[in-house]
Image 1 (cartoon, rainbow, N blue to C red):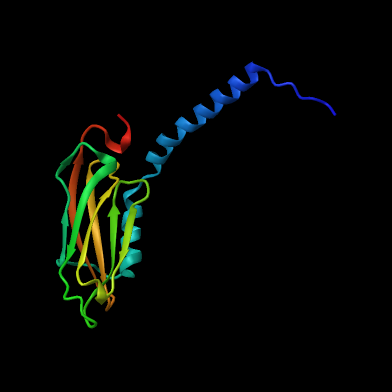
Image 2: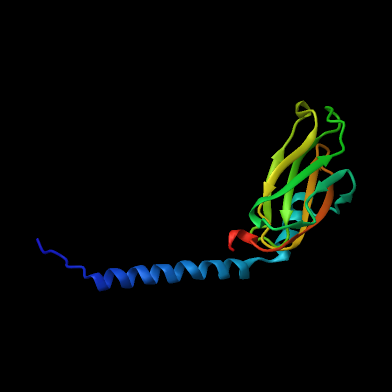
Length: 155
C-alpha cells in the first residue's frame, strides 16, 4: 500500500481556491436576479389572466436597515366562507435572486386570510402579494421598501 503525502502548501492552496470560488457565488447570484422572473411567476399564478387590484393590503416598512429581516403584514378582504375564500397567498420580491419568497395556503376553516412574517429583501424594491381565490381569480397588492445599510446580511 502506497501512502500519499500531502504537503501543507497543497492544503493551503486548495483552501484558498475554495474560498475564492465561494466569494464568486454572491456576485453571480446578484447578476442572476431578473425582474422578468417575478413577472413570469405572477403570470404562472394568474394562469395568464390579468390580476385584479384591491382586497389585498400589504404592510411593509418604507425604510429598513435590516434587509434579511423585513417585517411584512398581509390581510386579504374575504368572508372566508365555503363559497368565497382565499386559497393561496404568494409573496413575490421583484429584485430578489429568487422572486418567489413564500406561499401560504388557506381554507374556510382558517377564519381570516392574514399573514405576519419576516422576509429577505435583497435591495430596495416593490414587493407584490398575490391572493388566489377559490374561484381562480387573483388579486394583488404592492408595497415598496427601501433598504439601507446591512441589506442582504452583509455589513
